[in-house]
Amino acid sequence: MTFTFGTEVCRAAFDGGSTPWISFGLRYFEATRQHCQDAFCCLKVYIICSRSIAQNTDALDRLRSALGDRVAGVRIGINPHTPLSQVLEVVHDAEKREADCLVTLGAGSLTDTAKIVRLALANSARSMEDLDTLWGTAESNPRFRNKVHRPTIPLIHIPTSLSGGEYQAIAGATEPQSQAKRTFHCEGVNPELVIQDPELCLTTPQWVWLSTGIRAVDHCVETLCSLRSNEKGDACSRRALPKLISGLLQSMADPSSLDARHLCQQGVVDAMAAVSSGVPLGASHAIGHQLGPLGVGHGETSCILLPSVCNFNLKMKANIDRQAAVRDLLLEQSEVWVILNARNDLSPTTSSLGDVLDAIISALRMPRSLEDVGVGIDKIPTLAKNSLDDIWIRTNAFPITREEHVRDILATCLRR
View 1 (tube, rainbow, N blue to C red):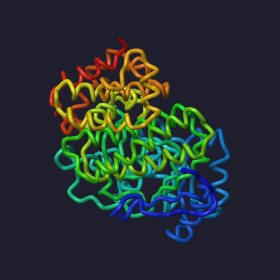
View 2: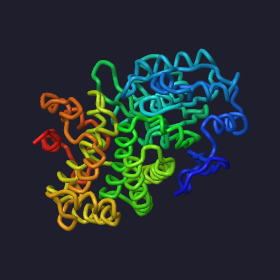
View 3: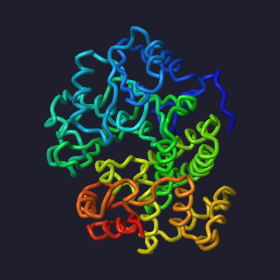
């Protein structure tokens, strides 16, 4: 898949879905200017930019220059895992500046922040107490308000990682007191536009690019391994996985390759199409949501948890055939055979899905244990307890209802 700049491709990300649209082929600042001016007719654009991009590159300056006097305000930096206190700061600033469009430049917490900000603006949520009435559902949150208004102002994402949150309505944020991660469904309103620029992504630290790529792999694997999957989700995941694995391994071998970055970005679209097909995910995502507030990146949680969750479900005989089918799909790629043949402890013919994923993640030199990301055994009880509140823990292939099952998974994520 060869990538060149020059002509914009703009299309719906998902078959049958009106949002989001994706744009590639123009540089990010050109595409943003064009869509703010022609598609959304925005006059007061509020930019939320990653701190590292603002400090280490000229990307924000180029975007501001392209938008000119349409820029109403800029927020630089959101802490990891989206503290709700910082979300409120942006709500107040964007409201004061009468923002009619939100643009994110970067990835991670600022993506979730923008989605929650426009939900808050639509519902006049100006305090922590107000935000506490917007997360979850009426079933999961006793304080959930009776009437929630849909977000209205346009949201444009310019991602520099592969986490994929830019393609869906769901957002996560962390409560300051309990450090619990809360999920906001944003009334099902997806962002309007995702602008892909593989050249901009060359500024992304390699560990962020590769680990968030495994996050996208996690979306595919948990979709394909779900006992509640559907034909659409399976088809999208099967298209996404080869793109992601090849693109990540090529990015590892040649970090300057625009083709590799573009291939990864296209894989993420298919991965998020699978997620948007309505397939509930499983324990890797559920436990990862609670591991995140301990200072672990979203992608790193998948690097550590996904093989262990697959092995747990296999041990419980929950989805044997589905896991075998995903393993066989991965083994269709020659790069994966090379990785497995280089390992003395693994054989392509006898390895489980968890083994194959472990080998791929290790080949990308990503973290493989809780200790690798600074989380000690003392955190396991709290992680197990908080994980039971996540929406996807019970939709795991083996439904998890007891803390001891989470502790079993986490125990295999410790160095042995």
